[in-house]
Image 1: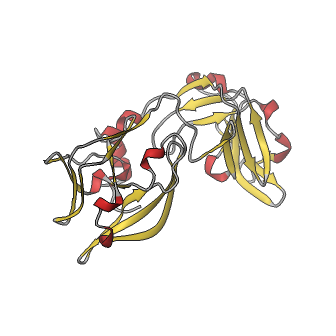
Image 2 (image 1 turned 90 degrees about the vertical axis):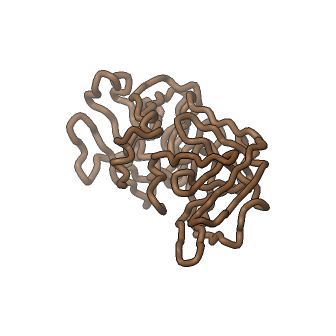
Image 3 (image 1 turned 180 degrees about the vertical axis):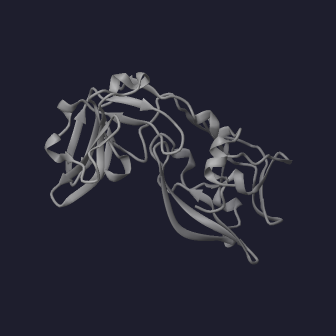
Length: 267
């Protein structure tokens, strides 16, 4: 199954495909590139949107942007109603790293003349004094972690890879429940570290393992946060498997595999 077919299916992830919604943000937001702060605002707008290549992000008043770091994009400075700039600081260049709406659609009218930046092309983003990864945090999203005594068992290729009665359940808005398990209750001898690292604005930086059983390898199917952000300390060093790609039993009942972008095997 391809990513677009998952996005367009009647899956739990389709709850994310909402918006766009534009609202003022009370947070002090800054963007760093080339070792310098190129946007610094306490009056940014937050654009909340979800879908393929669409995640929450910030737009800045031009007065709060170092426009000297912007120059018309060498790859074409205007596409329809959008003006693009390359971002240049010293020897570093992010092509089409910034843009603004010249004539935005009605639902984005408040963003006219405001400047945004390509999140991953920038060196760092900050909300207040804390670095934020991947995209802006959605103030309407919750992440709750609760200890439980549920019996959780993870099976791959007919082999029990993990089993515990002391999981932590992570409930995240519009996403499947995730079961974080103590390492002592995971068959670590079946896990192989892969070197993959991913970032989450709500949890931090995750490390990944594949599970090898005989000749079968389930690639990057389990992850852990060795140093989660301060809001979620309970998941530190616990192990979590993709519900989408394992047989997960909770209190003896096999759980249906949710359809999300992570249903695809490997990353």
